[in-house]
Length: 377
Ligand SMILES: *Cc1c(COP(=O)(O)O)cnc(C)c1O
Image 1 (cartoon, rainbow, N blue to C red):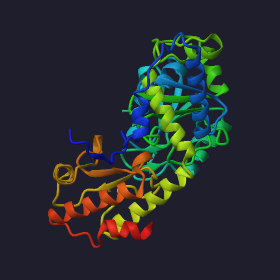
Image 2 (tube, protein in one colour):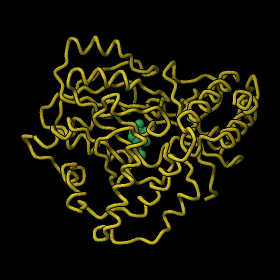
Image 3 (cartoon, protein in one colour):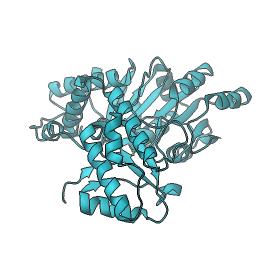
Image 4 (cartoon, rainbow, N blue to C red):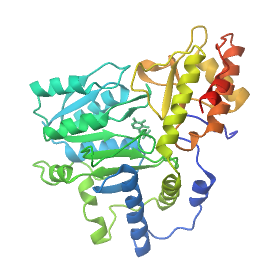
């Protein structure tokens, strides 16, 4: 492998400090009392990022495990679950709901726009017989960030437990979980926090615990059963051996994030400059509103294929950009400007390469993308 610059919306570039943290000597995490403290402190740091006082856990498995653990632990057969769907992840959440016996009721909205809280409010006025709702903070394939503040406050008014997939947003978008009444936030290590792939972290509110601990039907499965984590600290017992090296790396990445002056502002500023320079160049963004501060999704111009763009970026510039999947396959490219990727130098190189690759393939951006980018910084 040629160690390309990975400008994808996860995994993201990993800082050397974080990479070296993985090489630290390990201990036996089930027996060494100091590791329980280390794990607990790491969760406390994550609480600062999520802005919550609720319990936070780190589980061994990428972001998807967080989604599955929330569904497995909360949902009982027959539960009606509201699945807020304005994209591939929002829709896919419904599949997890059904897997665990829930009845998925979709609130569907425009896939090119952020969820409209007023429309959701009108929907809920007519039908609010739900204990749980699933939603997505940032729809990574389309580059759209949803207004979870308005959505979760609204769900809370109806006593509905909000389960928010914030995997590609936490650390890159404003998030005030407690102020916004978010019951469960789900995150992953490899996106905006820029730790290696392999961990998910999640928060559980008292309202969510009440549902998890007072089910009529037992939770199916073991690994995704959050009730095992309820008293891990008091009992000094983990449900399974912790991936200690991954957690060392996550801790290092989290410390870097907390020491950063204003990471959320940095994401916002770079994302805006990326969008403006692409638009100045005459390119077309997939999103019509709700533009994400962590990933930008660009429609592929006519007369060029995703494969050609991707290959030339990689072969001639050693930069890895992403496409998308599902209905967006081969239709868009995505630049992940999240976490450690979200720095002026890396984004500049990426836009410079993209500018050259487009010209090479006969597409003339109206301005030089990288120069426009710098002018907005
Ligand atoms: C990346 C991502 C996930 C988790 O996917 P993994 O492959 O497990 O990392 C979940 N939801 C969203 C919105 C994501 O962007």
